[in-house]
Image 1 (cartoon, rainbow, N blue to C red):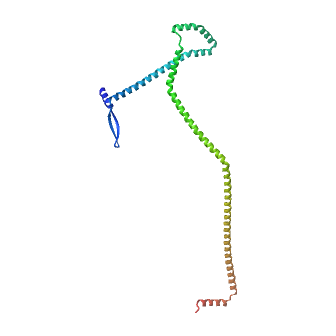
Image 2 (cartoon, rainbow, N blue to C red; image 1 turned 135 degrees about the vertical axis):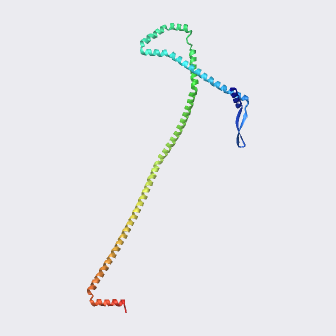
Image 3 (spheres, one colour; image 1 turned 180 degrees about the horizontal axis):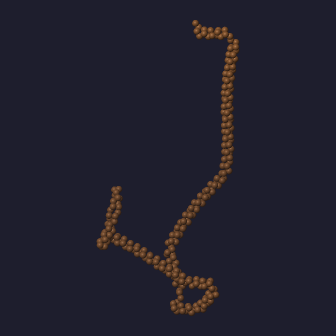
Length: 274
């Protein structure tokens, strides 16, 4: 079953699909790939995986070396911290212990040399330090480089923004200075324009006042004329009524019965001449 699947996979790998543009139509064409190209692709993939695994192993080894160097540094520094702690707690006892340590140091050194051979070579410490520095450089190179690049680009962008802001501020300051220089002239122009507008408004008010006054005078004159005519008419009517009444009274007083009969006959003759 596995052999069949491998053969089928190899058979499918031998064919590749390509899309060709012919006569305005997109056609799918299957082209046969040589077997050597298939094996080369497998070899490249295996090589890539192997290189990635090697890189991972190297990184793990460097990390272990870094941890070991750090532990060794902590172990070597621990007595110093202990001595400082004792000295801070009890200086007299610490000094006595230091004197005893100095007295017994040659013997201890000889015993340690006999037990462990020769003392630690400074070149070994230098080698450990170089391993530590190399490990730090290997692990921190990419993030520090990326941080430096990002920080540099950010600083450049900030500088560009600062330049733009500075240019805009300078332009605004220049505009403000130009406006401040032109402000007295504008103020004088506004003052003269205000005076002209006040004069024009005063003239308009005077003209409107005169017009309104003439209108009111004409209206009152017309009302007075109308009242005079009405009074004259009433006076004439009253005088005529008074004259008629006086004449009627005089006629009634002076007319006799013979005059009344004569007037009646005249009126009848006028109506009926025959």
